[in-house]
Image (cartoon, rainbow, N blue to C red):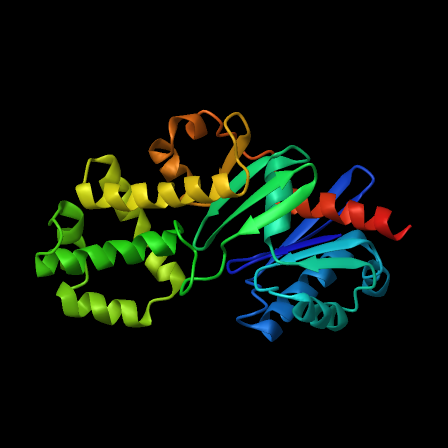
Length: 282
């Protein structure tokens, strides 16, 4: 059994022989809303048990990999294991499943940039991770980060300390001037900041100077961290998440030529990791 959950949805799946079943429920981030996440995961397990015609109490004994946004340490994992009654599960954050899903068993790096972001590398079966520390302290090159950088640039353009472009003018107009930008930013969620990113990526494609600066900064971050995680020319790199591919043209040439589409999704990765739990325990 596998669970893959994050800020937008939670998916519970199982593989029995060659058959694959999955169900989808609502958002599940255990650090921002533990009880809410628990409700969604339990609902998913119950739905799946119903589809399969098995009892939940039998299903929770199956080898499982649970990958959830917000599992920050072993204490959180143990709390979750107890709450769900899982007896044979490996519980981690949502990054290992994304890495295994994208690369399968091969060596390489993934740069995941959605609302949030992280980078991860797999080398000889060993996983390494960087980033993903949330919108206040990290998530560089994420959609949220791009939206926030653009608003910041719009305020600088208003002050006359940065060049005024179509993008900065549009943001100032859309949000009713600097006061409106400050008001919006004071209450905006990461997803609301992220919703501004398509304006930035479109402006960058049409040659907007400020937008291109932001995209270049994001790509420089991705390239720098990928190299620190051990990426070398010729090794696969996968760009996953809503905004990641927008950085492709700004990456160094050797990195551009190494971009590969992900082999599978996080759920596929979570099921592969669940199969390894089985081998560990027998």
